Length: 74
Image 1 (tube, rainbow, N blue to C red):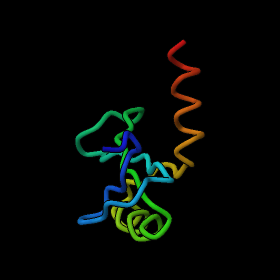
Image 2: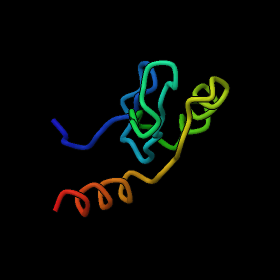
Image 3: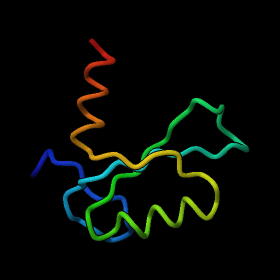
Image 4: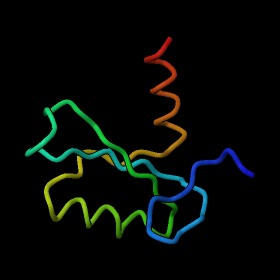
């Protein structure tokens, strides 16, 4: 079993490459960020899904997201 994060698209088991940071302004505070993971194939589809709803805040490479998270943690 791999420790590599997988894509959040329904039924996809591919390795995640992207982090889609989003929030629903009706239920989340402005600074809150939820995340979906995406493989290269599903990045655009998932981004459009969130974007149409006004939820998408940022799309970042998973490696950059992890680096920023570890820098913030310590």
